[in-house]
Length: 275
Image (tube, rainbow, N blue to C red; front, side):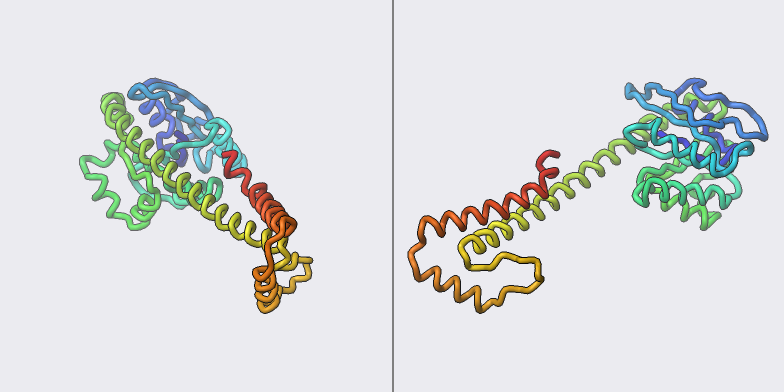
């Protein structure tokens, strides 16, 4: 789980709430506290998880380029890759910096990364009893931002009296989200495998037929001149071959041509079978 967000939105506190312990340093300060990506692990509902805290967007003590480079290092820490991006927002005005954070995720990890983005509203006590759904509807821009994050949204109150309660609530939610992502990934892999197989068989059958026709002398080999063989010529050769007994030599040439062209297709798609 990679924590992202503007300085002061409670990323580190949220990481502590998720892990159920003081894993990340938290301080009440007008300056940014987290300057480097930090990784901590823990167990939630008998499942081992890793939480990565990152410097806040528009860090008060680092140049923007250095902040983005450091945030990008979360990929190394989360090897083989992040399962979820948690973008922390504080109830209040939705800023351009927070909107740009989602654009950075898409630019760095691809447009498909939005499927794994969860919006986490921290300082939930500031909602003062207002439903989060009602709060979202007050800002069209914020509502569009949350809607584009397919992982949905959640609310945390990181105060001491609420931490244990929130941790109990978010554990099953994270597990359900992880299962949905895993099922989606398996469906995509299965669809990709089927597409690769269909392409392979289509190319293989075409290559076998082409190779056999070339070997039997029905079709001329492509000399790289880009000239198509006339259909009339092919039909005439096929008719002549059909009128004469198939010799062992002709059969061997046809099989040899089919094997040659089929071998090219097999080599081209070798990764499909090795995978």
